[in-house]
Length: 433
Image 1 (cartoon, helix red, strand yellow):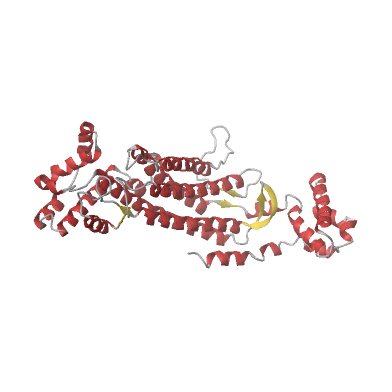
Image 2: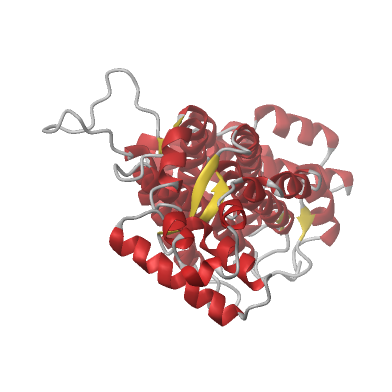
């Protein structure tokens, strides 16, 4: 578990204390169901509920001897309940408790992830609106393409987070199930009504069919959603890491008072937080492979998934929660440099307007191939001669046969590149659900 980076709320979900608490919640819900069906007397249920408890330290001590965590847990509970413990775990197998409680843990953790996504979404939206018309060069293959706005870049992130919220909701729906169906899922020592009543108390639905465990495609879906979220956070971080490069320097992550960038070079301001986001996101993505490997179990169940899940679920949730908090803080406090963005738009001496020039030529009736040739010839001269693109066009006889000076100059206006920005924002923000 990555304890160094644990945020208290998410870390608390994955403590031994909370895990055993969920186990006890399941056991008590089953006792209440048996009581409703007349199998446990009212006074016995009341006493069980009043006395039932456990000690993590005691469970650990018992488990070192019996080598079985559920039996160790039940022994600890029975020590607090006394003779009435004969009603506890009635008709159940271990994974009636463990898997149902695991669903409760995942549901609790996913709720926190969903709230994290809401916070991240609002943070990105605020910055996108702030920089709606902040011009920046668009890049494809790392090379200058055409002007866009920084706000549009961020709006792409915002829409991506919206999709993640939908994925979390779907994964939560699929994991909000339990099973109280006995050793191989056939209710041989159970009344199916016990499952229905107990799970309703816990806010879960019964799996329509199960073996000794809930099928692990549900759990792999949860990890896949976390992996996708972290992949997006990595994507955002990679963008920031590029934009902070000295040669680009359009956005910088926060650099706080007293912070140092290098042990040897005092001038350094490195994108260390973005790099950390990239690095830790790889762990969550790698955990998805393990979650997928947990799906094929032997027959009605083997235990090969269990040990791995005890690592990949806490780590994946804790890392994802931490990375979203880091991303929110970075975006809230980064340094955006609009003047540098404009300077970089001009860095290629007007070449970002090449398509506008080509289309202006085609509107005069010449073929696209001819127009492309004229524009590319002058573009390459701009690269090689370090002269302004517009000056070369104005001096080109082939250009002047088709376009006037005013028409050529009009191709270098930024206005058309901002014309549909409002429409894009309206399309995204008016359909946010």
